[in-house]
Image (cartoon, rainbow, N blue to C red; front, side, top):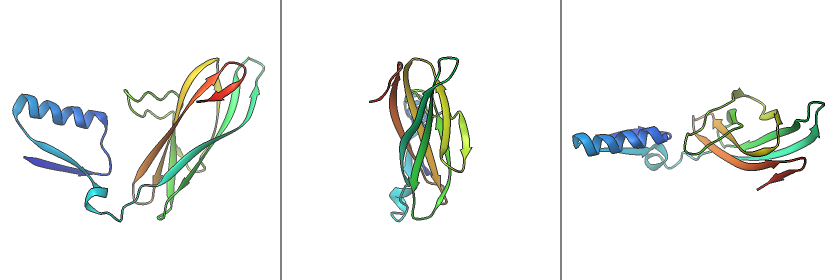
Length: 139
C-alpha cells in the first residue's frame, strides 16, 4: 500500500495505478494536495474571444483572451487548440504570460483549452467547443 501526493494527476497516472493493482496487487492511492492542505485553492479561468475575421487565404482568425484569477497570483497560461479529453492536454503554446493568443482556423469543429497556473503551482483548465464555417459559434 502506498500514496502519491501531487497537485494533479494525468489520465496515465490513474491507468498505471489500475495496472499495478490488477497485475501486481499493489495498492496506490492518488491524493491531491488540496485534500491535505485545504487552504490551497485552484485558480479560476475563463476564455473570451474577439477580433474574428477571414484572412486572404480563407482562414477564420480569432483572438482569444484567458482571464484567470488566483489569490496567490498567476504564473502563466498554456493553450491547446486541438484539445481531446481522451488524449489529455497537449499545448500548442506552453508559456503565455499575457493570456492572449491569435489562431487561424479552417472550417470545422474545434475544442479549445486553456490552462492557467498560479504562483503555488496549482492549475485549472477551461475548454470551449467552437464551430467555424464562415460564422463562429461557441457551444
